[in-house]
Image: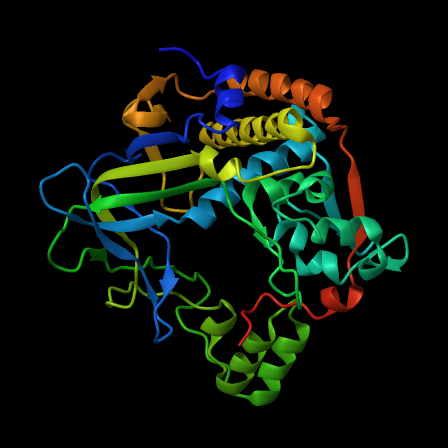
Length: 396
């Protein structure tokens, strides 16, 4: 097998080229086939935590019950972490990508967030309600031009926030001209359940011993209020809950007994885990940048190369979540899906190979479309009112 090349991406960036690049990775719990893994948790209509189950064809005669371990949105966020880390360390070409940076506070209290970390990327509310060089963002022409981009010409957004074009976004809070940039990269992870019929969930929660005392109950309200007043950074709900009842467990005092009730979710046992990703060239070919056929194709190639580099970076450190340590059971399958059912298997993506590919794609985009990446940073001062009114608690 061979490695993917610039010529492959150039062909895929033009009509008639390959439709997609598909990656499949087979995994198992790092502890072994008998290990328990923690899938993604969701909230059911009653407000209770739950896992998501589906029926899928997984190469067997009949559909099997699977559990969702990582969603497409979550997968993209994890791949974006590769870009965030590159921009933190300054290593590799991804570090030179232009970015939007939102700063809250100053000096020792400063908090910095890149568009790769914000929920809505270049369309995020933290950008929209902030300011640039003392002017509200609503008056910044560069920002207005980016939001006024269309799929017919995404260049202003690509120059303002390449991250948004790479991973997609929706300017959903705008009163009109809501730009939607579809994601060209999708991915997910699911596990084929070992238990196909009965409840597959392991219902248990760990215990904790408090060496000071197994139970703490503060009976006097004045004592509760003093403890709350002397405590640092307790949330509003935590304060109110402790003052009302005096139970030490509310503020982290006392032992935690073992719990095996059905409402406790500790994980599931799976017989097989699959991580699949698709880079859609057909979707990418709907992006235009006003640079003519050659220039537009060069930018599409750059986007594809950047996504492959970011994905390869994530696969070198594939963290999912706590209690979900996984290991590969074989080499990943990487397939270039061409026309008329033709499929070509290529070598697994590596950081070294994709970094070289990205460098070639960037040089080409520079020459054919005038794209310049030198670590440009568009600095947004976060609105202090937002920071002053944040909370770690979910919005009710």
